[in-house]
Length: 143
Image (cartoon, rainbow, N blue to C red; front, side, top):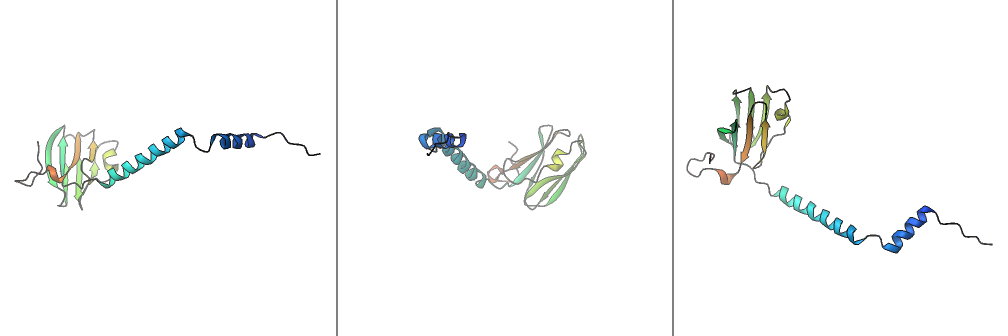
């Protein structure tokens, strides 16, 4: 006598997917959207423009602008102390006397639009692109 065993939960689950198909329409749509977002992100990241200059703001006002092509160290001692380094086309905050040190821990920046902010000392560093250079003087356009 051959007795049939009662179906277990595992077999019920397999039967469910076999009857419904492995993927539902919503699964395919979700996977397509995720893949499209990944492709758009890769294209966006790879098309980043290398910056040409750096602008340093204190309390929302442009204080200094420099080319990224010349290595230098800049000291700002307005509200607090900040030491900014331009080296090999990148900018980073080497020292600051603020308590949290977020600006010092921020990695170096080099692409247009990237920023380093030292909120306690009121310093903002922004990378500007080649198209934002003044054609006559070669300096950063402050407008």
